[in-house]
Length: 162
Image 1 (tube, rainbow, N blue to C red):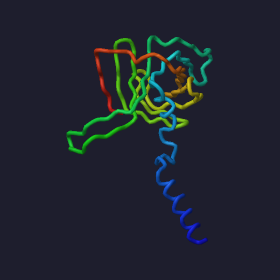
Image 2: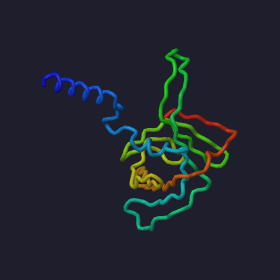
Image 3: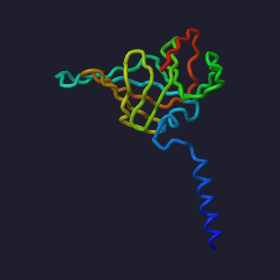
């Protein structure tokens, strides 16, 4: 009987070792974003000022997309081999910017050409996301929708470390 209990404990330990090391909730949202083709269309931006008397202004996005995927690079500078990390391509028209991304359940850290800093996740759904960026007293809420389209093709590539 003791051997059976010992074997069960060992089996449970081995199963626990096989789980991903994501116990802090890191990049949980990224799994939602990169699912399928990983392409999301930016639908609109809602902008307002904290404490301002003006009503929020919502503007449609102009041909803007994000593509979320795992990127693999070879580190030649230190001959460390290949590394793979979560990445995002931001597309606007014929331009693309690539950066690293961290996407937790409540925060997203990625490059956006007009808005600095992190984004707070307001709505986290499989096909609909709303993120908020606050810089000083200016607030921007970006609405994204899962796109069944392919990522835009571009000729100009600008890369940013993130």
